[in-house]
Length: 321
Image 1 (cartoon, rainbow, N blue to C red):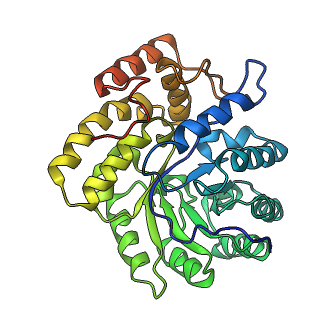
Image 2 (cartoon, helix red, strand yellow):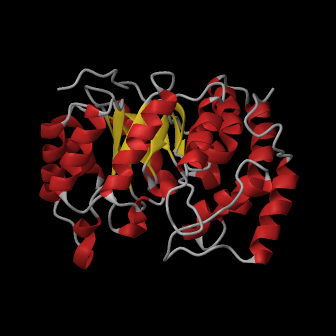
């Protein structure tokens, strides 16, 4: 295996970056480099994730994903760990992506369960076991497993999830998006109680304060492309047990929840792109079809929410007191 610095202890704030496109739907590499530089300069982040949902990975070719890995490592070097998402229905392709990520110097992987596993509304546990075997045979990079919402039919049942973590020591953390508070807390507790503790990173950005207070070790979220500094401040306040400070920071975050995560949820990252244009960090916001640009009325709503949150271009990535 290629020798790289492994990100064995995922915790804290891990933004998932967006992918800027040009008007003709190509990748805007210059804007991507600038975006990476902006986020990596946020004091207190733990790592950066690329090629995930926030980057519209479903519309990226494998070659584009590979190029994103190379560019990201050029920009970040070893200053900030790079986590590469593995998003594909093919276990063979997943292994190839994992191998490429390691060869390019990535520090960890974020593994998505193949969507084909939910075909017909049923899941065979042995399929996810086989998927992970292919990936771990190809790479020894640390893994964060993406736990999908319960209503997606892609959420791994808790007994299978625990078995998966025990069988594959490369799994160091779960990015939890189960959407159920009771299950969320139970997973946190049972993953922590394993002989080899597995950490929980929340992506419940709609109720982030409550989720962190349940005992998560950090968060991994596309909203970090816009409000990573607020997320860092919130994580630190929760970790310090300072509820008043945490509530005050959450008051700043809440308008961005309304800006990004209102119905329909699938537009969340489109809205984040528009927010960066409004705040003067991006020149343009294009999404690849079938995603579509938010309406003028929705963009105006985003503008109002950002103002309510007190966000400006000058303060966007600065440390929150």
